[in-house]
Length: 524
Figure: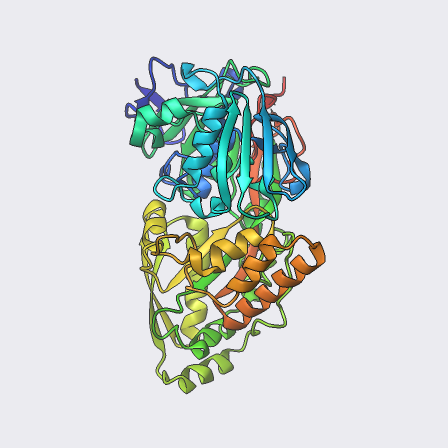
């Protein structure tokens, strides 16, 4: 199949198609009822919702998959969770046993049959398996997942958790895959995923696009759009030009003030600044010299000029990060008084005291994604002023994720949003069990282990006040240890053409992209 992408003016090579599908053409949206979306990436990651943690893929998963429950479209608050594949649910008084009653008649994409409790059990067990999931540690609290009948799922926990519903939303490991498809495809499932959402796989062309088609059997009704053309356009200028010319209907924004202000001035453009904020942190590998010396880590913190980042990123779209847990999360505590302030002379003095009067050199592996790379370049310049040289190796995004999890970078710049409860962030980034390059590793790049007791105690504490006190103590210990240096929290920025009706008010989205639902359409 030959397709034309107007943005590049080049013929696309044949892609990976499923069956005899006709992929949507890359033409202007209203003429073909195809929503053309531009993302700032050279290619897809792994199109498996249990494996990929990248911003590139998250939005797509939100369009293709469902969870037992979901965030109401356009929101990112636990208070807005509503039924999805489950019509209703109950919990035991002790919070250990949860029973979900599934909708009947939900169909898996491309004729893979009705979704049943067996698919949900398979999906949650798959999400808990470290060999098949990047989020296995999230599900370590599950004692069992059972299917008493074809439309009932029973989850038994080892102990209560701050938000069980958060684990089974349409997000990360909570996305439900269709068992038959996943087992038949094996590794190919990463490029031809099968879910139950409003849009389903059409065609994937490496380094060009992913094309989705409307799911005519979607349980909430056939989508108003015929499909989505998700185009990989790493160049900011090329992406902006395609949006300005009308070739793109929705575009991932460059997360800075200038981009937002410039795009607002375009004819027919609507800029969306939304929650959740992705917190950018420079995690310091305390297991490697010279970062095993807290004086060196403190010098790095003192050499970090957060005000400069605010000017670089823009104060309307960015806020200063002040804690190991992002603002707005249940349990967040402001640690501004604990983290050292900017003091370049003090940083140099500390390095000399630690035995490095001529400075130090640190090995860094970093993604080529433009937004993140720009932040690292500013950080690199700030560190150089203090005599701290960052030897940066720039790699493509999937390689970056693979290598930092092998503990190959002394400083890891990681930008992330998680389910907005303190336990999630503290567990994944600061609990010793999550230390990278270990059997249970996930994203503890710092080898931090100072707050394990508080994190674990808060997880099972039933008194909300005591739970928050434990989370605060954990944040105090992590900040004092300087396991990492929080830099800023960047809100999500997207833009749409004014003829795009999303079908809801966009306040936030945990998938980091605007939900495209069965009600999304072009205005007449």
